[in-house]
Every structure is written in C-alpha cells, then in structure tokens.
Amino acid sequence: MENNAQLTDIIRKVVFNASIQKVWNAVATSEGLEAWFMPNDMEPIEGHEFHLNAAQFGMSPCKVTKVDPPYTLSFRWGKDWTLTFELKQLEGGTEFTLIHSGWDASKVTEFGAPHAAVRNNMENGWEAMVENKLRGYVEA
Image (tube, rainbow, N blue to C red; front, top):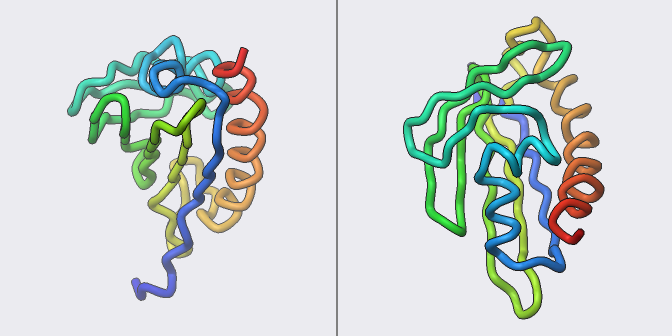
C-alpha cells in the first residue's frame, strides 16, 4: 500500500514529579503496568512473549523488542502495533514519552476495526491513561 496510508504515531510526552526508577518500575514491570494499564505477564526481557488482558477484547499477544533500563522499553502489541516508553531523568522529575506506532489506514485490527477509527479512540485513551492513571500511580 502507498505510504500515504500511514497514520501518524500517537505520541504523549509529559513530565512526572517522580524518580526515573519509579517511572521505570511503572512501565517495565508486570505489576507496574497492571496498576495503570492492564493485567499482563510481561517481563522486561528482549524476546519475552506475553499477553495483555484487554478485557472485552480478550488476551492480546505481545513481544518485548527493546529493553534499555531505565530509559527505554518497547514491545509489539497485537499484529501491527509497537508501544515504546522513553524515560529521561530531569532535575526533580522524569520526562516520559509514550509512542504508539504501527498505524496504517489500509489495515484493520484483529477485531475487524479500521486502524483509523481505533487510532482516534486510542489517542484520547492514552491521554487519560498517561495524565490520570500513570501520573497518579507514579506521583502517589
């Protein structure tokens, strides 16, 4: 398909009033991810295959693709997406960037929904997840 079918990545960049280690534990451990995202059996080991429990959407297969503690964690999510968490130590806090990539207007999800429609929902969803749930968890 043409490159114009490519949809832009969802990128959320925020600064948390929390140490880089606390944010790393929130995004790179099974317990941390479950606290703000969804239940899972992730381990921060490159090549580790795991599942996210996406409630009504069932168990979503994932595979860890990059681990660089405490700065970067990436994993494949489902058949098309990649989630990347990038952390940067700041004076008195941590800059956190979430990148949700792999969007393609010519594709549909495992559940038959067009990427373009899902992307719009996810963009709004990520804003709430990062700003409310993740922030609340790491700044508590």
